[in-house]
Image (cartoon, rainbow, N blue to C red; front, side, top):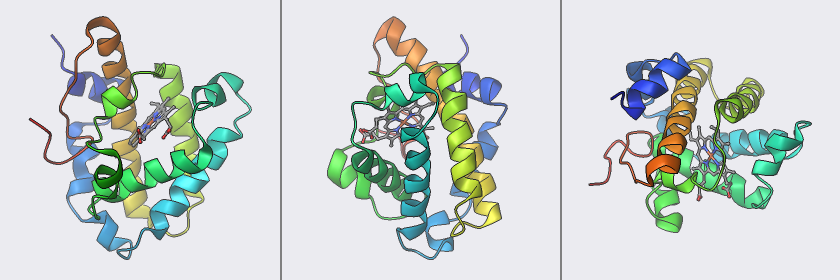
Length: 171
Ligand code: HEM
């Protein structure tokens, strides 16, 4: 049976090695070692999501306050890209598949999410081009990992340890 990782690579068009090139350097440090670039990116991203002209996509986020969604995302990104473990300290293990279980994470939703993230990255001046390329590969692979995980949990109801959430997956 094809693993979630394999599905993520096939559907996203991003090889695992490229997705996890975010671990080749400490991106948090190379962006100056402060939360600001990540706060900028997540604010930019969620401003787009909450104003999306596509209502079906905007509705997926209707249960969360924008400010909370921004903070959840930038704390996760800071932690995953080499900074302090802000997300886990406040929210616990990232467990991304489990946390996305309430939402319909379809191929179409992944493409819309990635569309906003591409635009957010393109308009965030505090992130350099090399980091943007690495981050986008990670985002594409993770988005399709979540699509595959969403399909699986809807069928089976399992939890999965993964490298998308942490370089040291939980037991
Ligand atoms: C949270 C949808 C992809 C990381 C959320 C939330 C929604 C959502 C509706 C709740 C907002 C909140 O209260 O924080 C989606 C959809 C995706 C997607 C439709 C399309 C594939 C991703 C990707 C990542 C990610 C690619 C990571 C690279 C997170 C994190 C949270 C979150 C860290 C916060 C979880 C928490 O604090 O409980 N997502 N997401 N998501 N998402 Fe996604």
